[in-house]
Amino acid sequence: MMLTENTVELCHVDDLKEGETRGFLENEAGQDLLFVVKFNNEFYGWRNACPHVRNAPMAWRKDAYMDAKKQHVACHAHGALFEPDTGLCIQGPCLGKTLEKVPVFVNSMGMVSILLTDINSFY
Image (cartoon, rainbow, N blue to C red; front, side):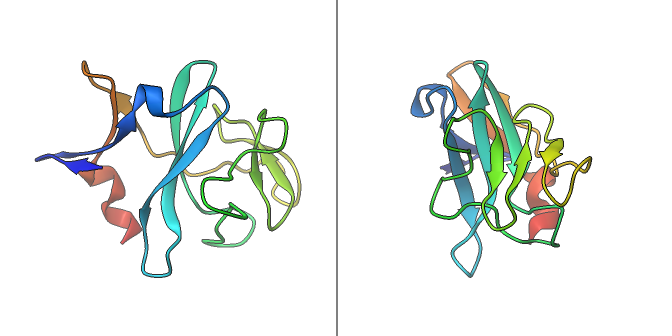
């Protein structure tokens, strides 16, 4: 990760394959504050917090945010499934709720980045 004046570069577009996720910005407990998923060749950022239980982390191990088929984001603590591009819960105890979006963008060099202002509320 690289910090610039207004952004945090998370990874390069080639670092994630289709259906893969990666978490970033660990908190003091060693849990990622957000994760990025590559789905349909697009990148989506989500806060690592299940809407079922406030701030409950979703992965069962580092970077394990997808279900076994790599079709849905999964909260492994509650069994909830979310659409990777909209964050909408389609199965589980938070049906109809959505993950908290973290806007990501890809710069001309292929770096997936977020704005510092979008993560200030995480701390």
